[in-house]
Amino acid sequence: MKKFRFLPLLLIICLLFSSIPAYAQYEPLFDVQSKAVYLVNLDTGNVIYEKNADAKMYPASLTKIMTAIVVLENIDDLDGTEITFKPYLEVMMSEKNAQYGGISLGGLYRGDTLTARELLYAMMLPSANEAAVILADYVGDGSLDYFYDLMNQKAQELGCTGTHFSSANGLHEADNYTTAKDMYLITRYAMQNPDFAEIVSTTFYDGGLNIKGQNLYWNTTNKMMVKGSGYYYPYITGVKTGTTEEAGRCIVTTASRDGYSYLMVVMGAPMEGDTNIAMEETQKLYDWVFSTFRVKTITEQGESLVEVPLKLSWNKDHLKLMSGERFQALIPDDIDVASLTTEYELPNYIKAPIKKGDFVGYLHFSLAGEELGQVELVSMENVDRNIFLFYVDLLSTMLRAYWFKFVVVFAVLSTLCYVGLMFLQQKGKRRYKPVRRRKNL
Image 1: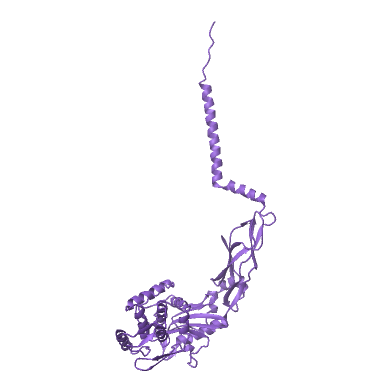
Image 2: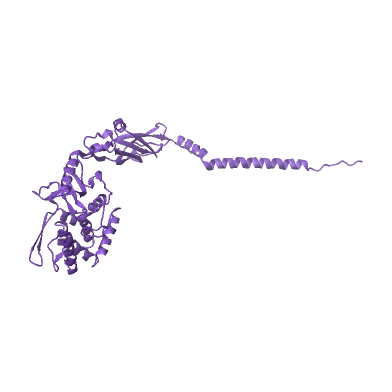
């Protein structure tokens, strides 16, 4: 198929007179301090903004999103499965707590027995590190290393290319790393699980009493969901925060407003006192994207778009093509649909007969070098084949065919050889014909 590209004059002028990418004007009007960002529209799958999306990053407690996935897929009955905090796990967490000078804990002690669901709330809301290892130890049948293998297998299944897990809770390990893009893939998958989505959209959970009779009140660390927190953003619907010295401040969120839904990963934000730059930049990026981008109809189903040369029809030499479907895309609100770059992927010609709606090719739409999508191009009409032109074309095809040329050449050469042989044979007969002599009487 040929590809025909039509670049709007306005875009050509922009490219000629500016060294800045055409889409750069739609980047946020503020500097993003976080080391890595990945922002995706969930309705279309379009990547709206990215920064160092494939760079190696430490996830801190964002690790617990993958931990939750593995737990949810290996425990069928979350409410009926009870798990006890084992002594050796408490020792492990006490050592970690001392090592880091304090870590996020859920108030659990050895001998505490909770359901898998309760432990998931403890792990995902207050980011309880002991809850993560309790769940990992249970699913791993006493082996945390086996649980890490399950985490890494799942990461590969999800298409993660820069991720390796060696921790269930995200406390720093040099071999526990990911990327902003991979973290998007992991979270997008996790949010498809109703139990996970419900847990990470909750701001408070009452876990009852621990073994010492203390109340287990668990509040979310995602202050963007908490009214009056100073970071509250009413459109946030989840999911998880994470912070260590090595990882910086991290947060993964989903947000919905006016019918548009997004998932954003922010990693490696500077740690400046009590200020959470990751949350501040998350809000700024959401404000920018909600005010800038809109879903627009690029082409309607049945819209006449282009013609392609037509053969074997007596009355027509071009076939009209139309859009086989309605196509919409998320683009900046101030972009005119007519200014998009279009690229037709079509055959050199079409032969009749053809029916209305038959597939012919594709029309690709792109903006500033990024493809927005494609629509199928289908026949806009029925066209019958002319039988005379069909046989003429058939004869022409035969005359051009290699096998036909071979047969003709072979036949000519065979005929010439036959004639030559016959000629030589006749000549030989005349040469050796016996001479009859007369007898003298």
